[in-house]
Image (cartoon, rainbow over all chains, first blue to last red; front, side, top):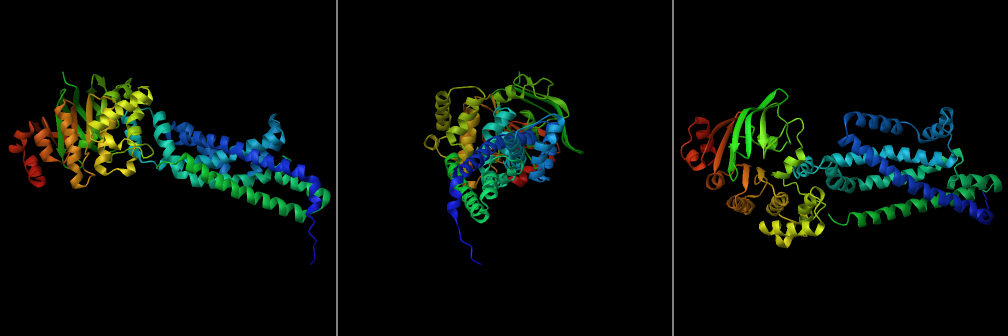
Length: 220
Length: 242
């Protein structure tokens, strides 16, 4: 066993790899922000909304949580054109990520909302606040505080899972690695490098989220 | 004319009827103490007055608004009918002042500065001027309950409903809350209290209501009722609690 590492052979492809890295970061940020917005709306609908809306959201959540992400992605990218909805790889990747994180965060945020004592809601209502004002000013803040660690983990999971979008040729970090490896055949070096990049990204995201949490929830 | 008028209200949870035709009239400035065993329906009755519970028949009119009317704006009703709970229910992510300021800013669209001035005023009234910027977790139970009272007062209610507001407190903290309530009573606030504090009910109350099995079993002037309960159930109850 003597394999000579030749990282120098990756150098000509630095721009491809950098583009992939940026793509993955942007994909993660956008799907996190939009996905959590979807999740908040979904959780609000399930807990504070009318029953019919809650049931629709429940179907969405179960559908996404019980199917593989890659199948969801393929359905959006390869399946939907049959209905006349043809999306670019990039759009399909973003959409699939948002839909996926939206479903998981709906469940996580719902758990947070349900953990808020009912008495706090009654206190808000007794102060003449509307249901939605109670949700916004009293419930959501407490709910996010409770589920922030779980949500942070889910964001990391989604970031790592985003590697799957390379399968529809969305140009993320994994796609870049595949591209480079198929040209210079330095599979060991390129996947080692990309694995390290994901590792670093995950650790960085975790500490960033932790710092962000401290700022947002500085008070008790 | 009475400020709160309750007529033959019936309420069931499933097959369990907890209010079996309750009627009660409360005038402005009354301090009504509702006593009775647990399960006699007193808390449920209180919660019906501000629409936290619905009832199946009868009527409750509070400040001219029919609580269970088809077109009733519960928000409008609750602006005039405040409520304080056994478990305080302060919002833990907000300071004492922010707890008090929330409803005035959100519901009445009052400016932050004006709301803060109101918060300072009502927190001073409950003796907590120095605790404006403390979080609920930094306050004792008695202090938390006084903040909760201040929070209700900030909406300038015409009636304040108090649901066993000293029951979750350590014995040595009960009096600081009762003193605040007594002061409100002296200032003419209309109060409806579900309470186990018999001495307080007798000394501060203007009207005593004894509930038993979902009905008003006996009512009258507290001192007279306590001195000479007419029904055996109240005689027994008073004997047990005092």
